[in-house]
Image (tube, rainbow, N blue to C red; front, side, top):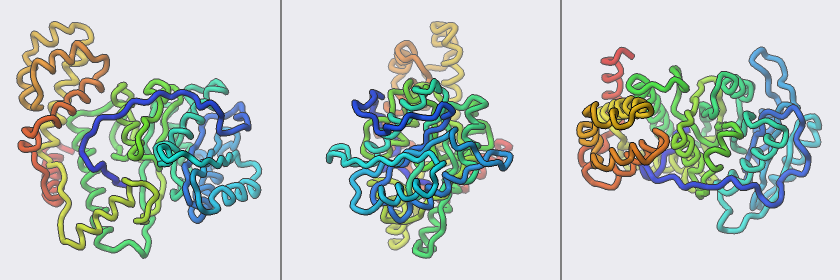
Length: 402
């Protein structure tokens, strides 16, 4: 799923992961609980049974049934006008060994959005994992119109076992007859561009916690993080939509890497009448309009990304050196003026940020915010047609030996 923010960057909103006054689920968690799966569902009676069936049929990486007491699923049917809750409860009756909890709520208008619903669910899942002494247990998010692969949970747990505190899964769409061929082409070309971006980023500024091969997605249909990481970042940011991207920004601000695992996979609907203001359905509608008007999407160029990530790698190197000798790192390496010029940020501000912030993620977020305060950055790096950017990226990756 390649959904994009209307703006390339906007400041993340902090939130506090305070437990709700009333718990959503009255049934206590099993003592073996390690993964709490959450599904916000609004008017999803048609799609939800398939989503639940996929979760009830999980296997481990050796092909054996996954112990059902090791995971649970919490469905929040919020502000529904259909039989979403009834359908979920009927599924629970047919599968009594499946740890499925169905909660019905009517959220007030200010909270009646996917961000509010997912936040309630994640807070509850975090509390339940902590209640059984599993701070390294996983809060796993998916959607009601999404079918997880049979090893979705096992692959997530395997990544957690080798140290990942957050995992973004690959999200593939299920082709439907209703999606126009031209929109499908836009979707595939965008996916190709995003994967090329990821490969270039790996070559220029590799992340040991997110090694190659990897992908680019970390969205609510397939996203997990430990209860400890959730508490550390203050919970899910209180935003109306794109709450998944806001959460990932919060993780990065705290220097918590997201493992983009190719082994963690789901299949989601390519419908254009989605339940959120901005998401895959929104992006598909944008592409449909572009197709009708014969416009090509404009994206960030390969040369822009090369310059940005090369500079970030240099800044990260100096940041790491600064942890042992801050004055020497700033005063003796002669990097400040050059990097500030490359990144279009004030040099004095960059030096002050080194002293002020406590993580590299905070420092990089400061850089991004400074870049987007001035028109110089956008004038220096205008967006380019998608086809041009893909050519540039392939050429750069080839030059780097990728």
